[in-house]
Image (cartoon, rainbow, N blue to C red; front, side, top):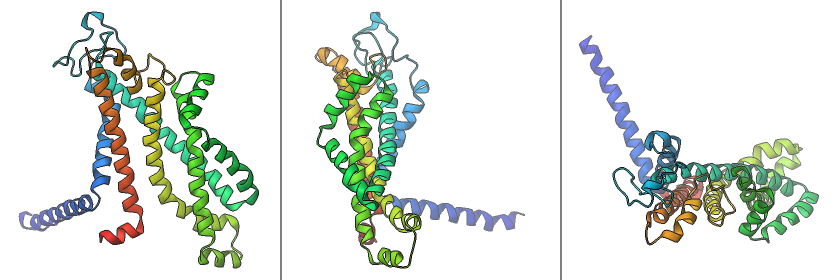
Length: 297
């Protein structure tokens, strides 16, 4: 038994070495993808495990402990209400990641449908794309503020308000891809052979949109995270009782000279999150672009 176990152990070690070597090669070829994905995964893990990371309630008031500097007890200090800033920043990441992911998924799904319809149907292109152009003519922040003023403050309304301006961007991207693919010789040959529209869409057109949409979705997520912080900072975003990075900065800006951590720490988390999402998007673009792949080999 001892003799027969040697080849098994050697094979296992060989597979482990091959896996580590493959991971190292992937990391060396896609550093931005790996770094951005790892940073974003770590932040998401912290958001999910927030109750385990900090024992403080992010909305619990403790006026006796107000405006304390960073200590071992309060890593980022406390705000004017005595609330632990570290707990509020960690819990605030839940809002930002939820908004970013939701806006990216919803805007991509709706924009994909609109863009496919506009690229395939002439009357949809004439009517619907003019509506999309009208939405793009309005500054997204102003449109979101107007919607929030009418609908009220809630995370659901924030997602809707940020999603609406992002749909035209996805729709125009998909429409351009569809119009380009339709002119390819293999698609014209399929049409001449009598291929039905549904089969043409499933086999040729839809697969061509997947890679650009994945990359664009990451940039939409980063934009949505920043927009949510804008809205919350201006008082048109999440309700005051819900901790978000924009709310924390807005509440702490008047006491920046006394407690700078209330502004610096959530701002740093916001910047790092957006950077991680953008790095992930850049890495996915390089990974999914066939020309970039040929250059890396």
